[in-house]
Image 1: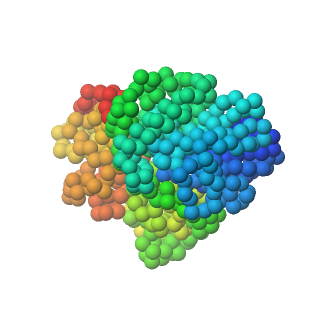
Image 2: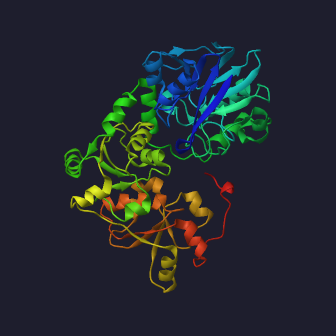
Image 3: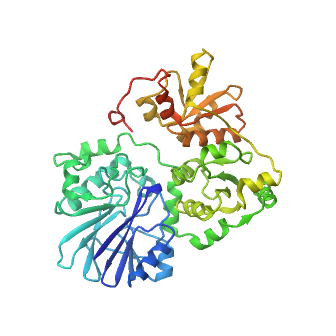
Amino acid sequence: MTIEQIYTGCLAQGAYYIQSGNEAAIIDPLREVGPYIEKAKANGATIKYIFETHFHADFVSGHVDLSKQTGAKIIYGPQANPSFDAYIATDGEIFKLGDISFKVLHTPGHTMESSCYLLLDKNGKETALFSGDTLFIGDVGRPDLAQKAAHMTQEELAATLFNSLRNKVMTLPDEVIVYPAHGAGSACGKNMSKETTDTLGNQKKYNYALRANMTQEEFVKEVTDGLTPPPAYFPENVKMNKEGYESFEKVLEKGTQALSPDAFEAAANETGAVLLDTRDAQTFAAGFIPNAINIGIDGNFAPWVGSLIPDIKQEILLITDEGREEEVVTRLARVGYDAAIGYLAGGMKAWEAAGKEIDKIASVSAEELAEKVATGEAVNIVDVRKDTEYFAEHIIDAENVALDYINNHMSTLDKDKTYYIHCAGGYRSMIFNSILRARGFDKLIDVKGGFKAIKETGKFNISAYVCPSTMKS
């Protein structure tokens, strides 16, 4: 028997490849399914089952494409009602895979169809639990995402989750290994560990939501406390996972069309597409196409795209580092942004060589900013980190305008003022700068290195440190 966790850091998502004999199963696959098919082929196996733990909100699963390409059956737990052909299992139903078996445990609460898959070895021993978003390492699934679909309040869903955990999960042996769908960084929970597997026994000891003496009332209060609004694209991903989608191959073909500078400019003018520049922040600042938005591919790319481009069907034109076009289109498709219509062939070098207009964003080092502050010059500093990061530690008198809520708080800034913008390390501040630059704010200056560099100078008046773990998320 082989169990392989295929973890994708930028989505904090775990898919699983399990093989017994010459049969394989995939649990919660990503959108691009080629690697699973190639892995099974290399191992001399046939993919028999695609187990889905629930209708995912934070990414588009590869279940539909994988089933079409392999003939594998898509399995959901009770109460799932997809628009495509799938097998809806009953609670406790057994699926054989080679010498092992999977037992369906219906565990509603995160969503009403949420189910875990309990792996039984060849001797019938309860060995591993693929827990989806029901149980994470250090946390449990947030109960507010399925309120409309379930016609329930988040408190009612939390109570349902409490009973699922107590009656279906916590009764399992302590030595069972828990394999969740997500780890730290996912928006599907609020307190997830950086560890991506653990024993159930350890989770019973250290996971706040699994305390043995915890009442249902305490569980509901603690699980719902401090929940922040989910990204706007979550309902759209649920819809795609439930109803199906265009094949990944077609999305990739459309998005990787190479456009000359003239063709790129014409497409931008004709379609109203978002110009998405995925290069490094400081590289972007040194020269970019006017009105382009910078969300760097080497950061939390997909979640930020989902948070800041509200329309999942918005057409997108790409400016990337040469050779990374396919990677960008793939990562957009993972969260349902299938409307990329091409990329700038030759990148910014080709754009400049064609004599096209470019824009720039000014940057200063933390030391340069410190000198301005020291001279008594009136300096407006904007901190675009999350409010919890800001309250933990910040420059005294800096204004907090979190990138997450840029559209709601843009009116607090004055286009006639000069602002020095910083985040933690420089990634988010450039996103913020580029969005506002495209909307007519032309006096923004980026602080290179962000708060880390600012603090290292030792020249700023910094607030007393407050441990983030003592604050609500």
